[in-house]
Image (cartoon, rainbow, N blue to C red; front, side):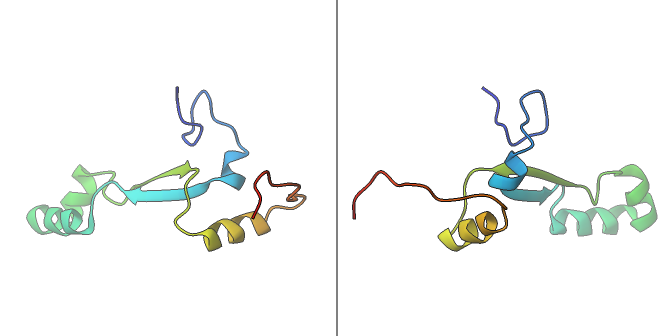
Length: 87
């Protein structure tokens, strides 16, 4: 089963509204500095075309409840209807 957070065959556009957007650089800052030092900036950009590239994906996990609240407050027409647990 593929995740719906990656753009592909099973991608659902509603994911962008509901899930948490994450991104990561292909190379870490330390790796980029090392490559630029070894090859020089001009050659590093030429040989490593994806040196500044970032990969982004969506996941249904949030670090804090406040981040969920901020995300879901922005969605028009979203309404909390009922919860099934008692306090």
